[in-house]
Structure formats: structure tokens, C-alpha cells
Amino acid sequence: MERIAAANKITVMLQTSVRKALAAQAKAEGMDMGHFMQKLAENHILETAPAGDPLAAQIGARRGVVDYVIALARTMEAEGAFDENFILNVMKRAHADADFAKMYAAAVTEPGKTKSSGRAGVALNQQIGRLIKRAVGARSKRDGAGKILRGQVKDEVITSYTLLEKAAA
Image 1 (cartoon, rainbow, N blue to C red):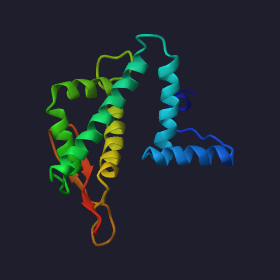
Image 2: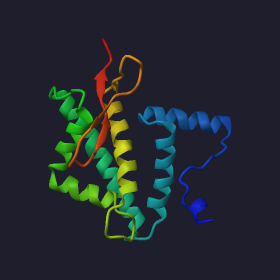
Image 3: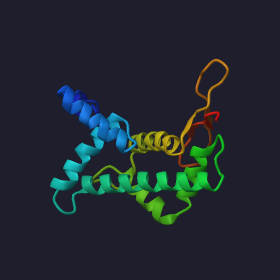
């Protein structure tokens, strides 16, 4: 029973017209359907949670992290800082900001706990990587066989990341 309660994936059957409307809204906001549906569920929690609710605070911190990183990625791209290690470089620059680092820590700390959760950090970092890639119109770099290339580092906020490239113009 505990295993079922810990599951994060759900399936929802929607009327075709509802699904199409949600898909159009998600696309208009630059999100995939899964991220958009998650945001809808989180909005409900934020709107109904009592003041000081730890889960609502974590959701707010996570959203702040995502918004900050997307804006930073766009700024860095405009500065000409795009390279294959762009995801790592954005995360390093973001974490150099003490306010961001504090917000990130709140985003990856499970509600009601004092220590960050490795699982929460991994999930957030994966989401951030996808959003950085999308924010600057990049794609995953691949080897000759079509396999996505990844970078690995030590002693950084992320330990692995997808190498990026821009589509040929």
C-alpha cells in the first residue's frame, strides 16, 4: 500500500474537447502537457492551502527556481554564452546568487523536513534541464549513432546533464 501511495504517475481520461483545449493552452504557454497538468494541480493546492502550508511554500519555491532559471538562460543566450555545456553553466551561474541558492534549497526540501531530498533535487534538475533547452530553442546533442550525449561533473549542483546544440539554420 505504501508503494502505491508513493507513486507519482496518474492517468486521467479527458473528453477530447477538454484535452484539445488544455493542449492548446499548454502550447501557448510553451509547456508540454504533463508540465501544464502538474501546474494546474499545483495551482489548486496554492489556491486552497491554509496560510503557512509547507507544501504550498515548496511549490512556490520550485516555481521561483524554474522562472529564475528560464529567465537566466534567455539572458545568457542573448549574451552569447550558449555552448554545449549550457545547462551546467546556467545552473552554476544561478547558484552563485545566494537568494537563488536559498530558494533552490527550499524547493528541494520535502515539506515538514529540514534536509533536502535527493529525489526532489533530481526531479527538479531534470525539469530545469528540459526547460533551459526549450527556452533557448536548443536540442540535445547526439553522437553519430543518434545517442544523446551527456556531460558529467563532480562537486556541482548537478552531476550530469544533456549536452546541447542549436539547430542548423
